[in-house]
Image (cartoon, rainbow, N blue to C red; front, side):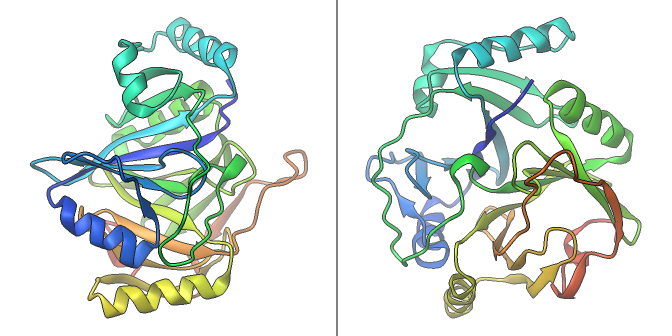
Length: 292
């Protein structure tokens, strides 16, 4: 299986008005005008949407969507999963229409995260950032997500994403007692990372902008809005990302960054095991990972 990219993410939210304020005035993303009262659709680029916020009684991760190149690749992926004994829910046309895609298949990873495979996303070419932000998306997808998974599911989750979904290991990083496995499916250094911990939880998602100053301006907007900065400005060792982390209204963090390295040559890429997470900064990051 060859996934194209990490296409979208869904998040459950108890306070959609707070999310609207945060999305527009801090993240600098666009809220679609046709978002209904129970869902906010956020645009980062030409795709109709990249982040969906769903009104819920609880906050937290809802689903992740991975894109395939076309219908043939989608059907082949479904057949591969079924042949491996994975339960695949193909649903009806309604979920696909809701996601604005041509077809949708739903599976669960071993930690219980809802994973959606899809093809033929809807594009509208109407993105305008309210804060002048420009995001690195395209063939790299919308960004990345980090899942904390319990120790008994850690190896099983790695196997699920690499053997079944076709991700490749970028590298491992040790943050104290926490081991993190970084996975890529295109030239983005990682689209998914798995961190061994005491709970199953989506710890953060990442948005990458095209200019360093856009990170600084977002930091200023977050500070002025009273948003909790969970990790200070810093630069990671593994992907070289210059970024900071902040708390969303759904308690999942957002990493807002610039300048990540890319995996441009799969043949020469060497999987490494890094000790420690940062060249400098990112104070508070360790406290965000349960068990550290």
